[in-house]
Amino acid sequence: MREIKVGLGTCGISAGGQPVYNALKQEIDDKKLDVVLKETGCMGMCFVEPLVEVTDNGKSFLYSHVTPDKAKRIVADHIIDGNPVDEWIVKSDTVAESDTFFKKQKRIVLRNCGVIDPGSIDEYIAHDGYEAIKKVIAEYSPEQVIDVITSSGLRGRGGGGFSTGLKWKFARQAQGDKKYVICNADEGDPGAFMDRSALEGDPHSILEGMMIAAYAIGADEGYLYVRAEYPKAIARLKTAIAQCLDRGFLGKGIFGSNIDLKLKIKEGAGAFVCGEETALIASIEGKRGMPRFRPPFPAQKGLWAKPTNINNVETYANVPWIILNGPDAFSGMGTQLSKGTKVFALAGKIKNSGLVEVPMGITINEIVNEIGGGVKEKGRVFKAVQMGGPSGGCIPATMGDLKIDYNEITKTGAIMGSGGMVVMDDSTCMVDVAKFFLTFTQNESCGKCTFCRIGTKRMLEILERITEGKGQESDIALLEDLSHKIKYSSLCGLGQTAPNPVLTTLKYFRDEYESHIRDKKCPARVCTALIKFQINEDKCTGCTLCARKCPVDAITGTVKNPHHIDPELCIKCGLCYSVCKFDAVEKI
Image (tube, rainbow, N blue to C red; front, side, top):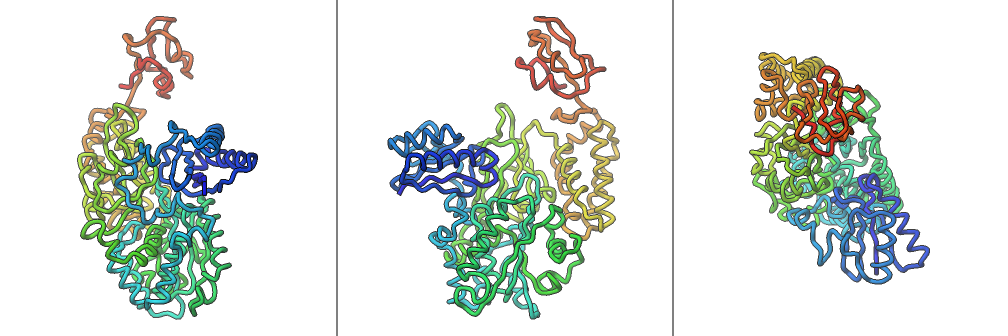
């Protein structure tokens, strides 16, 4: 059977995947071809989307950068004439340009993403879907399930890395006539799209993981807390839940047992703080999303004061695989304290941006330089990675041999987080990066804690002052003092980790802060107040393009003669720098 799959996750759609799908459908219908056309989720290779996979006689051909016109040729040449269009193929049995991208990956969470139609429960079932929950109900007691998850070494993939089995055990042992399971899909980190892609590409695996957790702790009701900015993920989850209800996989007596389970979707309004579990619970209850003191922890007193287990999307997606393949298969990967795999969203200044899943223990250099293909812009140098989102920190390229391990990453001052990995090159100003993340966390603070509400504001003011060339020698010590007070005085994880981007950039890139303060210079030439533009007379051809584009007429000169920028008139918009074709405009 011949089959065509089009990657239609949010990333694929934004790259133009829907017109490609429509063009393929039109060609297949018009020519009455015996071909199955499917949509699938993110295939991981976001950097070459839209992606189209053709499966013909058991052989797979993955086409990149497909347009509607290219789609028509793929149908004509490949499907009808049997001649694959080699120049557009990024991966096949004979063409393997993407080997470096996939070679070091191990897909567990993403096992079905880009493989199955996420809207088809039958395709999920055909790939061992719902076999794990059937096995659990038929063969395991709740305590045995918890033992399996515990011995696998699975740690929560949402940030803190707490033992999943231990969390389930606490919820199981908690006294209560009603218990809940919650999936935290409130993915709010800038540059992160792991949970979104998993929900869009394989929603049933998350539902199955929640079913197993519910069985293990004794819950009969659960919620998937998904931010409303993920409409495709929500739509596919709704479809999956409806299909499960229709098959008897959810509701009364699931899978013919005496176990009941009802799952609902709660759409979050986009508050970053609601990624914190107690704030998330408050939001589900219809209250303002604000954290509360712990203990009691949700396992003892969670949703509506009932015992509640909360895990994130990636954690739940691992569970069915562990049940079917055994805990040893999972714990056999990774390091002593960090087992299994980790999904990362590779973003920033990197060639191969996209979604990757790698075994724990792999190094940062392997991810960035081999899987990611290194920094994107020619001539630039890998400088740092920002891990853990606004709650994380910046790890310098000099520590590129650091292994991906919860404990090792934490030692650097960053955190693993949910899995965002933003790559930076030498054109990045680390003071500006710290300011960006402080702006985010300051805006997202719920305001409950004085140190978080006011402390992050004061830190942001200092960073703004430094990037404007008004920094003082005492600012670095003041930033460090505020950082430590905010970390140790804030109630929830947002406040406790908000200073991390500042502390890590101060730790590894202090010279950049000192340059901003003492020399009034931005080494990366990013901070507008600390740079100026000039024209190199030896390179200037007098084409007049820069003068014509300048919005304030700060550039003067005659045709075919070197031009000049008046620093008094220049507003530093950078238009001249971006339009010059001869690299004559320089930042200094």
